[in-house]
Length: 454
Image 1 (cartoon, rainbow, N blue to C red):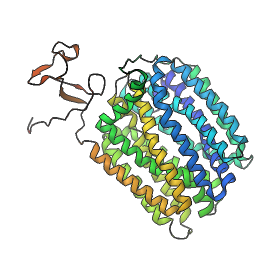
Image 2: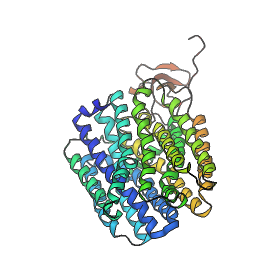
Image 3: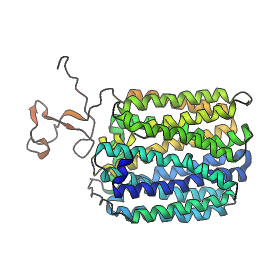
Image 4: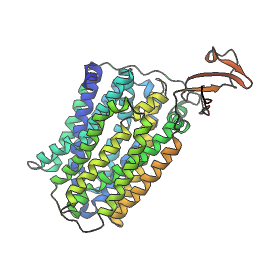
């Protein structure tokens, strides 16, 4: 899998991602402890609201930025957003009020909403071969896992020497390092895209692409299942560890690290597994696993904690991490399969926005239910949500999902260049090719069944 790092451009981009995420991981731990200091036992509600604000920025900003992404050099866009995030991170140690947390989180995550889809859309252009791109997706998943494994471990060590406010300085260094690495490489120039309807049509196209493509509709349902499991971990770990189990602040990092370890293990195994199994065969069972672990957690947190509670929590978090990785890692393959090169920025922006709209639902649900009704109720509600989402994905994603589809174009004249080689039928001209939603293909055709024996 490391062979993909021989590509210099990808190597620098991957290093930028790693460094930025190490800093982000330090901020994740520091933000949890900051919320606990400000709100005490209501930290779950404060953190849940802060993360919901983060999701509002993600959902609203990403599609708008994608509408202008083809007009801005990618390196300029990525570096400017890194510098913006570094500046905001410098202000976080001085927060003393809850509203200040909310304002700074919105500014920080608005910059991330502009950065991340542009970064993700660059990778398949840098690595056009499917095998290389699959390896890059696993590498990217490993990088994200640093936020919940190595960064929390580093935070645990640093917390024995310094107060948590200094962890935000690591976030600033991470974003500055990311900007320096992006500056060091040349990136592909965005392909200009013209759509009828102007900026609005550009901003809305990615969402239309998702809603019109069956496998992407299923991916959105799977994102909801992942959000249910991830929200329980992100929002309620600090309360589970500190209040329910009465453990030290450093154990918050260990619990988040267990989630990252599970995710990392799955990401390491996936490239070889995906050579033998389809995305559908892996992603759907993983989503049901998320629902099952959350249901078990609901039952396990109802009685008084015992000696078994801490190892059980670590095991549950590791399972949630592994199942989430199996769902999330192949998602980029589905997006590349479902969009043209010119439409990849819009597709990734839509994935970023729509998937985080799921988190916008689950973050406050996890926080407010835990604070108001208790952790068992919160886990049960999230388990039900994950189960419903998993069942919906099974129904939305056809078992037979070929890339090339036979379809007809009754709206195009017979001499249209797209119909070269197409055969005439009673309702137009029919042909077969890799099918993607675009200007000429606005809806998904019915998949024709192959006769038995053919």
